Length: 149
Image (tube, rainbow, N blue to C red; front, side, top):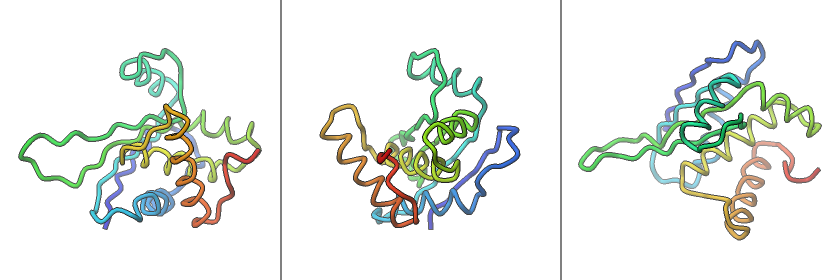
């Protein structure tokens, strides 16, 4: 069984529940034969900007940052990594994209977990592969294709 640790740093009143995040993470990990541990931290615009500046050299907010866990040699752990999600930005983007905040949180959670598993979208071919997986997982959860606008 996968373990999800949810850290609600954001002061936002309406947020998805730990059960929802767990369902989304489990769906993204449904093809994995191992159990994993994932930390999800729901943060403010300031915190995500600080993280983005420090780790990605971009001095601006972003909706999600994935931090894959690098296991030290000789250590056994189920830790897959951490996701930092900017609550305010996710809610703003959801409004602009005419979708529910829940649907956007689900999409970004799956997107982030796929990054933790090693998927990228720097090249068109890789982006296409990752997007197809995201769409497949979201469909199984009852959400529509987030790339159809």
